[in-house]
Image (tube, helix red, strand yellow):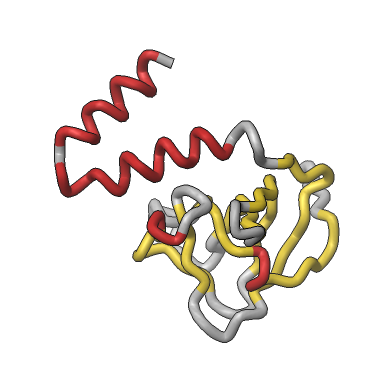
Length: 127
């Protein structure tokens, strides 16, 4: 807990990172209210617009460089309903089209559930 508080304090010192700090605090608060999804859901993007990842389930926490497009598939881990009754889902996206050396193969974050359709419960296959 001390490390989290120290990290939040350091982020607050830089005015350009205030939103990042607020989003981190918001994400930590969300943790106690989110519902874990068991078994995991496999979702597909149905929106014709880009679906941006968020570091916390709030519009201001948008991760501008990380987004999904129609028909991308993700695995859903947690569900959260905000005060406006908007449903958010914590997902993981694995980009299989990148080179093996690319560091952007795995992206995770919060997205709005309304932009997806459920395909099936996800069952990991042991290799």
